[in-house]
Length: 368
Ligand code: HEC
Ligand code: HEC
Image (cartoon, rainbow, N blue to C red; front, side, top):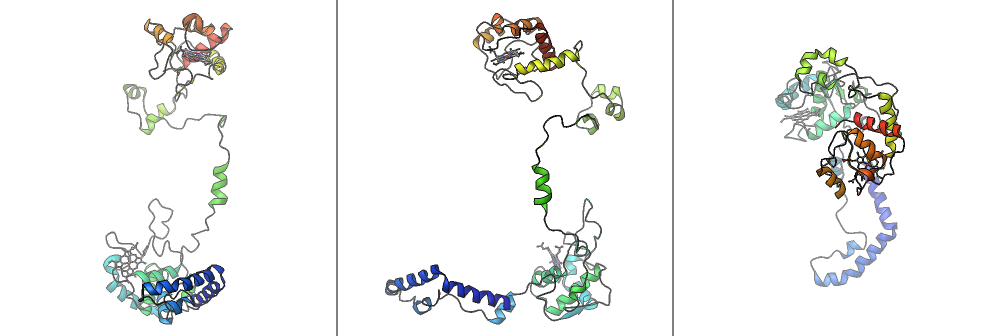
């Protein structure tokens, strides 16, 4: 109460001093005459000279009715008291229909008691006893907002008594306890230390701001589960034949290479493919680029990627039934123009036969 009066006085002082308000006053005085002629009912002139002429000073009773908040240390609590026995009677009369006789909650109305030790569970029970850090919140909330349909109907002593009873139903006080303004701050709430100041700017932001690892992040690959075990892949006959979960979990990591491919050659081909990578993508998520995506190109008809715009020459070759056999690819990669003379692949060609063999093996390893 005294706080708000002080604030008001400060506000008035500022208003007097501030040039903007001085201008507003002058403006109001200047406008007053025409306004007066036009609207004789509005006669705010004397008041406007001192301020805005709005409202009046609040009465102490009005401030008291408005100033009902209770701070965690108990500041703001009115004088009064109430014991558990009285609280129990009041609670069963005014609260139990929704919250249950012991605060256990009827149907889906809020539970007020119990749940201690469940906060880390999958389904925590958050109550006054298990969760609320401050008793002042309980006093303030009940006094301000409960019973649900009759807010502000509880007097001060009734509120003390009901709060004492809710503490008792949470095993925080004994049945002979009387809650008063004086002993209010001595009540220890079980979860008082369960909250901490938000430190995400120091803990999470740095953790998530570090540059993410994009390559060579793991030295060894360790398969822990397989899609078939996780049950996301429909079972096929092979699954049922090859055996149980354990067997498939221990299956070798890499899919078997297409027969006859030399892994060393494939690896060398991956290096050679860097020359192609300026224009071609390959792999699971590959898209068309300057050139068409090359997944499964070995053994495929030429010009077969639907959404790629091939040159008319490549289309014509495709219509003639050109198929990318390893032999034909070898010739195309030596000098594209010998196979598709007016084609669009502006690539000088791979001079060395072993480079061509390697890159073809690499293409073969990347199936459709
Ligand atoms: C008509 C049903 C009803 C009655 C009667 C009632 N309450 Fe409530 N109470 C509610 C509802 C609904 C809420 C949740 C309100 C919300 O979340 O806005 C609630 C919330 C509460 C909470 C906060 C629970 C939490 O964990 O968030 C407390 C404490 C409480 N009531 C105490 C009381 C007390 C004490 C009385 C008797 C003086 C009482 N209530 C009477 C319906 C009721
Ligand atoms: C400068 C860009 C560029 C480079 C580099 C390049 N290509 Fe191409 N490639 C293309 C284009 C464009 C086409 C489509 C040609 C057309 O439509 O005539 C193509 C077509 C192909 C095709 C035929 C695809 C099909 O669907 O019919 C193959 C195979 C191919 N390239 C392999 C390679 C390989 C292997 C390399 C590296 C050794 C390579 N390309 C390097 C641009 C390039």
